[in-house]
Image (tube, rainbow, N blue to C red; front, side, top):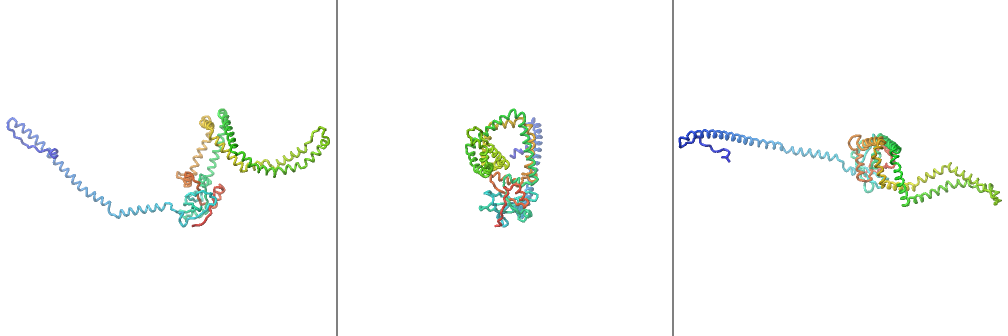
Length: 438
């Protein structure tokens, strides 16, 4: 390898035995001497540079070792770093919600109207402004006792929120915990949408396109669905149950209201009939007509008294308010809904109307109101104060809906806020009975 990089030097002089070759030998000797000097200079320069590179490498290695050792030393720096990391981790862990329902400051409640419903984990407190803040956790014991623990039992929020109630954890919770301004805004948007829909439907039904192409087909389909639903309610015994449920009501109306009126007006009818038809009774072969004017007068007076006392309206109201009526209507509407849902011809007709470009201008007002309601409702009910963050109440509702459990949510409110919620939806607000700490 060394001979390949540095070939051996050729002697600068060559002696020839013949005189004719002396000049050629001298020229060759001169060229060889020049090559030798070039190789020698190249070899010297290469060796000097290689030696300098080796020395610089040897000098750099201790500096790297010293720098690395300086970074790794002293050991107390490592101990300090580990201690800081542990401190920050402990602070972060302490900020997480703990098992606050088992602490000494936890309270115990009982929901007498729970009816087997569960309790969601989040506990909220309503500020004076109506904004809900998560304040603790709740846990339902096997004996029905609700354990409520707070993140900070000494927080001033609890000074005014002294009433504990439970609310349904479904979509109704968003409506109940919304501020009065938010509910009023949603009412106005919903009323606008309902009004726009009614206008659009009325305009479509009066439009020449609907009258010419859809009205008769709709009437035929709806009439067939109503007949099939009525037949189904008769077959499953709903109509017979309705009539059996009406029997005691009709009997009570007849005996308590109608009978005294009829008896009072027909009590003297036989004697008046005798006086009016005395000659016909004595001479039965006379062939005259009987005078029925006393019966007609009594009947007319009885009917007039029934109208004056509004007995038909009261009887109809009693029949409509009776439990058999609501049961029958429920079963009939269920049967009608099944028939409408299974009517493929009706689905095709509705689809044809939705994609009919001729009817699209009639729906512009309703579409605008629906877009406005869809823009406002999430911002008021789901977002946090109109921002892009998720409302903690909405997060609890979403979790309950996804799990499919009818859990209720514990909320601490002031007496004024409790009365407002009861006035808004009394059936959904359950007052919790405090049992004291355990």
